[in-house]
Amino acid sequence: MSVILSVKSAGKKFGRKQVLDGVDIEIPAGRIVGLLGPNGAGKTTLLNTVMNIYRLDSGKIEICGEPAGYHAKRLISYLPDANHLFPWMRVRDALKYYSDMFPDFDIIRAKELCILLEINEKARIQRISKGELERVLIMLTFSRKVPLYLLDEPLGGIDPLSRSKIVKAIFTQLDNGSTILISTHLVKDIETLLDDVIFLNKGKVIFAASADNIREVRGQSIEECYMEVFENV
Amino acid sequence: MFKLLKWDTINFSKKYFWTLPVLGFLTVLMSGLYFIPPSFEMPFTNRSVIVLRLWIQLCIIALTLLSVSSWTGKTTVILESSLSVPPWKQLLSKMILSIMNCCFYFAFSVMIYALINSAVSQSVQHAFDGLNDLRIYPNLLLYSTVTLISFIIAGSFSLTRRHPVIFTGIIYIVLTRIYNYLFDLVSPWSYQHEILIIVLITVVVFGTGCLLYKYRYQQN
Image 1 (cartoon, rainbow over the protein chains, first blue to last red):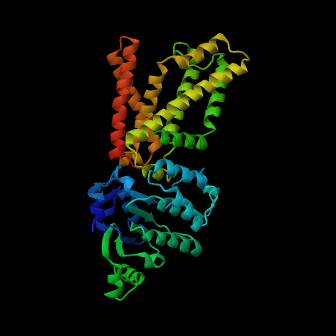
Image 2 (cartoon, each protein chain N blue to C red; image 1 turned 90 degrees about the horizontal axis):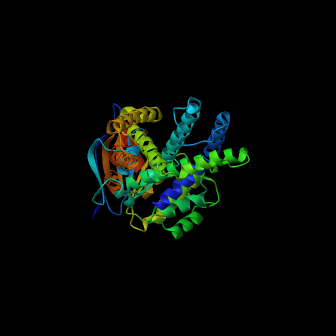
Image 3 (cartoon, chains in turn yellow, green; image 1 turned 60 degrees about the horizontal axis):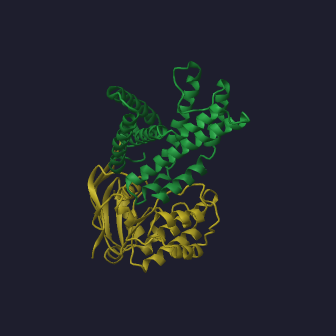
């Protein structure tokens, strides 16, 4: 099975704070991986370094065998943890922007997702609720056809109804054999989606296993395993 | 490239739509004080127009800075950072936008001045002719490149990254001083040489900016 994302000995400092400390991750194609950890564990920093928004101090990152950089960005669809769209935009402007700027953007799929996620294309980005905004960002992210999807806290701070719609949208993506890396600390909501989990704490990978292994060998749910591992750190 | 320029222009016009008319009207107001139409070619020798000339230069710098940095909002920077577009195209788009904005600002100021004075006098006509003078474009190019690289240098090192706007200003002043020193040292012997030197410096500065943007720049 080919490796989609490979992170080797990744190190990153902000000032004196070591945010990533020798992180090693390998994600094969077609897997849905949960990057789990408490706030400040380094999850967002790791995703930003994969996107080459932050530069690594040490180590290296490869996406489908290509080093992280502007060229490799065409292989990734990224959903950041906050709104990255221009605030003056309406949803239809965002669709036009993505259509113009990402050659792999599938406008038909985007329209389908708009219906599935009940998105109003005329809505202003600045005025919509957090749940609606998250649905818009999910729609834009999954309307691209790329080998790797990075989702940073896609379920953070939104109501259960929006949450279930987003999980449904992620489920529709499963048929395409995509590789998805989801960073979150809301373990319970995405538990059923995950093939593998990586627990990150203070910039270090402290635990990594397949979801099946946790359920069958350890006899735990992912949430129980998460609680056990982090309580003993 | 054109699509990027299109979205940069739309974003700038939506975000800072007020800057061009406000700066334009203020410039006309200042021009009115001296009864001199706004011009790029105001000599420093005439004491009365020093303030006006400084004002025009400040407006150009402010417009350039806004044009090259309008995409770097705390979160919206991620949108541009996730594009698979070569750094030189991203930076070139910002430079073209800033040159366009400066030309619009200048043309707008002259036009309003002419309208207020109810007729296009000879001197105003002369100021408009300034836009045909090819010498202003290399100068605008240099302005936007130096502003752009100052902004990128400020975002490329952990010390300067914390206060990017302040450091952009400081780096801009240092770079323009170095440029003036180099320019005096070479002391071009003709108009063509002057343009050649400006273009050469622009290319070197732009290339350095692209390398820094590719390997070092990051939003704090």
